[in-house]
Length: 486
Ligand SMILES: *Cc1c(COP(=O)(O)O)cnc(C)c1O
Image 1 (cartoon, rainbow, N blue to C red):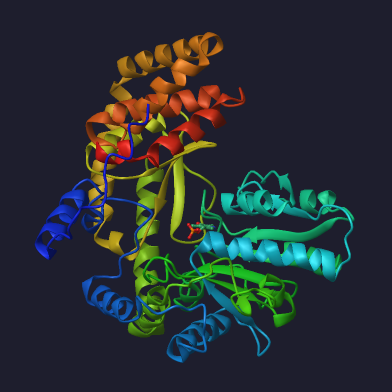
Image 2 (cartoon, rainbow, N blue to C red):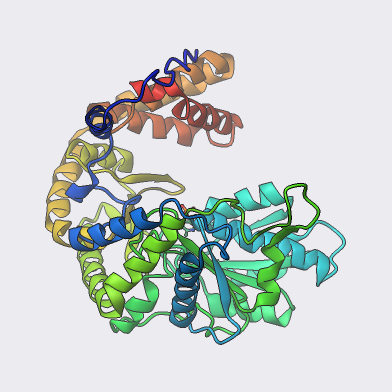
């Protein structure tokens, strides 16, 4: 299938004009995120700040954070960013942290530290166990997979928050870490961190709060006057926090933080090799070479926006979110899931096919993330959406109307899904080829009908053991050259 590898390095270098002509051409296929009709992936603070971030990134793009002694300037910026976060999260003099490449790396570091802590400090002899509400980001499952930890998954309650009683019941002699999110991604609700942390403290366990989304949003939302449950180092028992600068911090990509209550826990994530032929090697996180640009850009973003700036941005974003939620709740057919605490939420429908609504929104130029458990559409509202609220609600009205009248499409889709279920039993392999091709074309717009069918099928195939294979193949294709040339 893969004809890949058809592109070789050019014999001679191209001119600057040729390079940018090509990149500009490639970019035409990407989402046009500056138009604000998308949710997730990009956090845009406006052109003025954006230019500053870009400039700071450029100044440090070749500097390597692996060796702080060689780049004391970079080290200063990283320790400043860590201090700023420690203060925002109400830590004390002992609070410490490390910048990482993103939320996933921050979470992995927290779980690696927990594993080492389990072995060295708690002297757990079996496989250390981590208790995860099912709403946590897949980075936790990924970390358990990478580090050989046992994941113990706990269902959430009807309000989508972690079930503390269920967590308590799941604790065994091998448990090392309890986890909560502030807020969790799927429905944007904050887990009962105070209760989870109290439990951890009572049982002498570690407690990680995933504030990848909330870290640089909740503190400012609270300062703007919104009442929120507390989730940070004010909560006794919280031992680590992950927080993404490249989400609501509005920094350039590749910037997140793993923060620890004290350096005894932090040092569990460091890796040192003293007898390497290349000399003594020490590394604070997953990465070896650490891109200086992301660190400098994060420092610049925090200083360019400032506390008042973040408070104003999040205040406006929160109001926009409330208007969106009210607008969606005005339809009896639509339901916003749970009671979202902040600026992200998702919604579904008990009457209409929500994936069809997603497709209609895609036809109108929106890029919106799909969820399957329960079926829904996810809105990651940022400051860039503040003046797009009415446009979204107008487009939603069109989409709902179409979804109501699209019974024929729905019947067709049901037949398709039914057929797939049948064929799947007989001919799994060729079917996957077809399905993944179909899915690979689904970039919204004219192809979006197929996307609805795709999601329908994924839902139907769930539990048959084939969904995982299908997604694996899909991801493999997406990361192969042929796909990119389409
Ligand atoms: C985005 C996100 C992460 C992972 O962050 P990446 O930067 O994408 O690796 C972790 N937790 C939550 C709640 C998130 O939304």
